[in-house]
Length: 329
Image: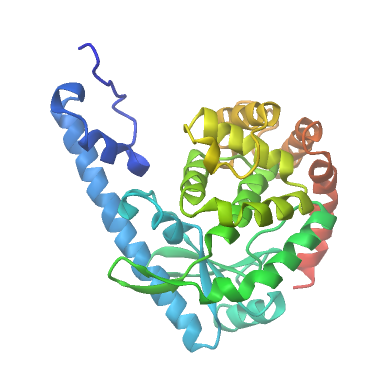
């Protein structure tokens, strides 16, 4: 049918795709009834999953509060609030930033669950009603030691506002979530970390799209730009803005920095080649063993060196340092 939209049966509706389909005139859907019903059922399951995640985020936050810790929910259910339909975002786990620093938070978590593994920015936590929980004592990090030091100082400087920025999760209850200004920096570092370590997924870019349109950027753009320059993220931010403009149709007034075509095309190619966590990267030629994984990271560092030399050069050094850091915790 001319003008109709066709679909692959194996495609998942995800995000807001099914919400968009529901707005189309029936004659333009071009979809078999069986597939439409399947997607409708999956959409309802997605809504139920978000309700469950909302409840878990509220209950875990409240549990930590009663134990004397202030918290802030990172990404996840906080991001969902920015979507036109908060229940259409594909949920994952709960990332909760707990105030107190790494030693205090790790000690507290292990007093409850002694064998939980910790890394530089978070520690695993017992699941809540089947929902995975990551407890962060640092929201994110950068591989370059100099830039990471500045990033951690930034987090320390603005944490008060994040722990006190409380919102309602639907009608279920209240949690603290980051401000838009914080998210513009934090979630960009999160995407950058995925690029440097594993691979960027489409959901992370869609999330960032909604971060960009969630607030009046004219009031915060100058401060955000200053921080991005300090953190060595200016060119990467320009690449993401190129993707936002060219792929998502983002108007120029919503961009936080000028788009950078060279970096944008490189990052977009990485997204298309590797996928989330690099799961679909056909360039992985070293197998799935630990040795193969390490060789693949070196190969990735070499590829990234041309665009992000400071991070790529520091990645092997960070890995060695991190090995001993974990031994000391």
